[in-house]
Length: 145
Image (cartoon, rainbow, N blue to C red; front, side):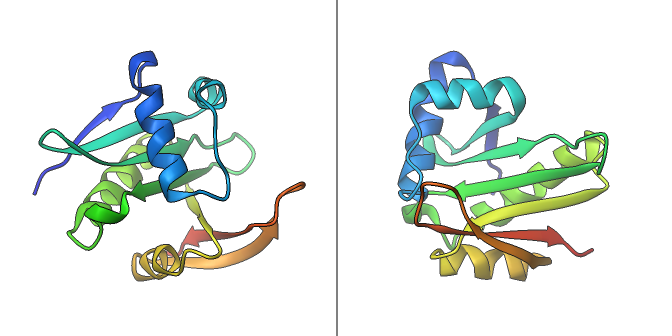
């Protein structure tokens, strides 16, 4: 299997937003919010042939911690086929090429499958929190190895 991973461009912001909102319904984003994220983060889309299977965010490492955040989202109908593992491996390599010395991720607390996926791929939990004005709990994890 070989995913085709492409950077988000102005004409694909809606696709990225739609994947995000389908996977994280507790935190719906507008197109304007995605455009703003595009100014700070690396946003990508993953395709299996012509089928859009997921999206990802890489928050580049900061100078203080050299930690990057990698978040991979796979649409429910494409899960358990290896797409998440392949996409994660590509995004981890990208984060490392940016100079990351520590890699973190964040998962919606109610997403048991997402948490299990992160733990299977070597991440360990270090924080849980609720964003101001929201009810959903988020879990921060870091890559142990």
